[in-house]
Length: 109
Length: 116
Image 1 (cartoon, helix red, strand yellow):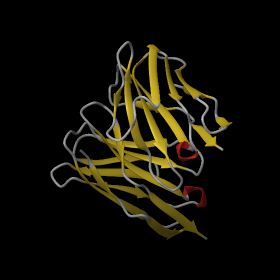
Image 2 (cartoon, rainbow over the protein chains, first blue to last red):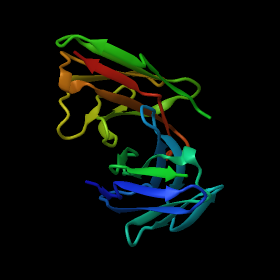
Image 3 (cartoon, chains in turn green, orange):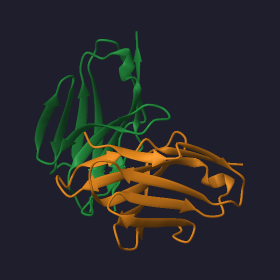
């Protein structure tokens, strides 16, 4: 099975940088995903890591260490619209996504 | 990018009735479709994995006789909630996986079910 942990809530200031951590224990691994979800909507894809290292995409970066079972999502130059839930998900050997409980990020002025 | 649709987006029904939710991949053939459920303020939980032409694989704790899944074609999977009860009220989301790249899943917009 999968055990995926991430903080429940975080608060950060507009313009700042925030790092959301995710640790996982898995019986099968086909990559780690980060999704953003606004209330009442389906999740939207942010990033995918399958190899160790940092993937950068605009204001968002994601890091993976497979040996440590650890990933983080880094959000730079925070904007108010970044207030949302951020979901860490591990893809198992059957290509299904196993989600963490999500981190609710509040960006304040 | 690829598009996945769900229908209906909202459904309100009486307790004891059955509700069918459709998930369609609009511009690609989905070798696998996944059904997730999300209760308020909780994360998505995988319910079942559906492969075209074969029986769905259900996650532990999900009743296969209550949540009927049919994957009749490479572009359509349906989830039927039979004899729905108020505790089945939830946000149901499907995702579809194309043959290549295998790691890519496209999510539908979700169906919100309210059972009275």
